[in-house]
Length: 410
Ligand code: FEO
Image 1 (cartoon, rainbow, N blue to C red):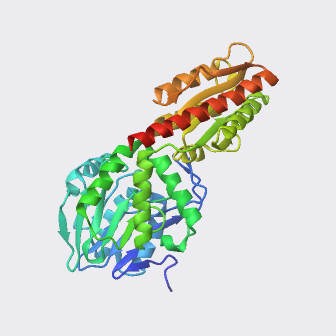
Image 2 (cartoon, rainbow, N blue to C red):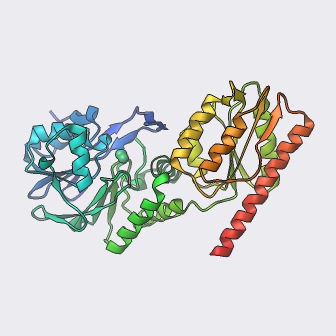
Image 3 (cartoon, rainbow, N blue to C red):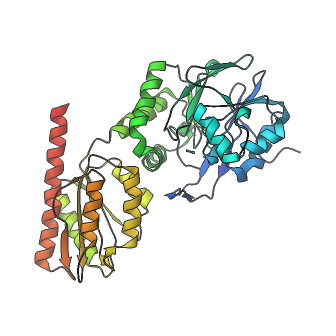
């Protein structure tokens, strides 16, 4: 009887043996609405090699896929491109099951794997930039890509098939049976790859630029870019496009889009937000209004990836920022969006600290905070809503000037 979970051939002697996680919706705070895949790859060279593993609960699925093409005990080498547990979680069990001759990782990967799984570091063979291993009929070489996504991150290149195994880089969270990007709609690819970059890599953009420069210097022929999540890029157009998007996202060039994110207690901060949007739109901005009872923090940062302004609104509750707004701001602060005009606003009853706290946070994030926060007591009247509209127009004007300065620099 056939194994339930089968390997998928992606090139001659190269098989996808990963797992499909249809149901994951919370990936350490990132809402993964379409699930994800954990990609592992099996090379049927003379020395059978496994590249990365899968999250621990999916070990059986991976082993079933491997067993559909070869006895897993024949695996002699395992390469760990990235030690985060969505890729290494099944490594200890796999090592026990197949007794590989060697497990390869970067220097930092060796340390991370030893500290995660309390295994002898000497059981991991360190490889670094430019190192090559002969698999018998195929050759695999390595390039370290530190902080893309973790200090241990590295990529592997299979010369004979021109495949770059890029671990987290160029991936997306997307469950499905489509193993190649050209089988997925452009709209889904664009959104999910941008969402992945915004939520996982945005704060590491300087390192992403180093990775792109290193890949450019290596000048490797690329027939496929195979990340550890989501589909494989295999057309020249798709590969150029995702590399180009990474270069663009890393720069975070401002655009004429404003993201207005807020929550409300009794509707006053809500009507302020909507009046601000009127001013932004009148000033020529594309507007994205995100009420945190219907928008998730991970969608907010996705919208900010290609924006020029961030306006944050919160009522004051118990002298503090409203909890949902504080949650999102903490998340945004960590991901370090840049090149944004920013302002805070909110309704309050007694002392109105929340917009002041928000202003401090926006300044700490290094954003271009325009004005004192706009604070309105209790329910905004027509005059107050006029101030909100004016704030929107002021922000739109500031973005216009920011874009002009950017054009002059180019
Ligand atoms: Fe998909 Fe950084 O792990």
